[in-house]
Amino acid sequence: MLFRSQLLSRISQLRTLFRSDIPDHDFISDVGGSLQFDTSQDCWCDADEFEAQVRLAQQAQEAGEMDAALGTFLAALSLYNEDYLRENIYDDWPSDRREKLRELWISALFRCGAITADRCEFSDSIRFIKRVLDADPYRENAYQALMLYLTRAGRRSEAIQLYRYAERLFAQHLAAQPAPSTRILYEKILKGEAG
Image 1 (cartoon, rainbow, N blue to C red):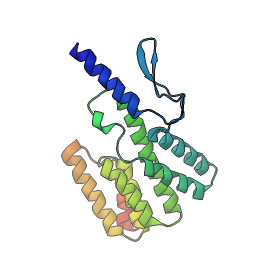
Image 2 (image 1 turned 180 degrees about the vertical axis):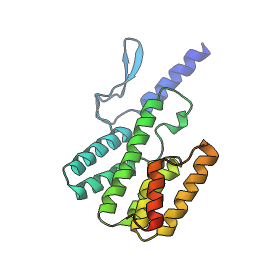
Image 3 (image 1 turned 120 degrees about the vertical axis):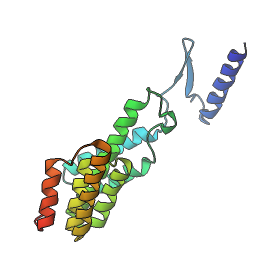
Image 4 (image 1 turned 90 degrees about the vertical axis):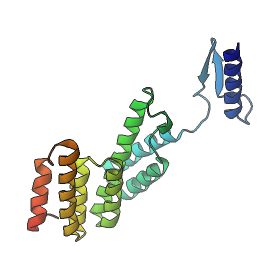
């Protein structure tokens, strides 16, 4: 009896939380004895909007509309404040969507880095890729991109230090070495041939 009372109380709280001021807009509906969130109602979800904005930005980039692409990527990135349903980190049910959104966010950061690098706006490119490495310090392609952007920005010594840092990090935590492509880029930077 106590459980039923608590459940009914929670349902009432949900209905109040999702109540709309618009008549006939009830977001929580009872369908055949089970409660459902009525997605046919007019509602906004940051994760859905993030995905839509990234898709629009990718389309603009592929069409060669770089100003529109960058602006739309930046709008999308402003919606991604933290991993999806971070408070449910140990639950399985949101993990696929969380990972998909996270990869989409990282892809958007890489694309912003590439667009700004093509414009020779290397401080922005560097900032975007550093955000990737803050989120995933073992993502080797981010080290490659950052090394390249640092070199193009005239910060060759930082690019060299970054490679050495990645080399130590991978050896210590992954018992691995950077990929041959990363090593080749490092050697080109050492010789002054990259950029």
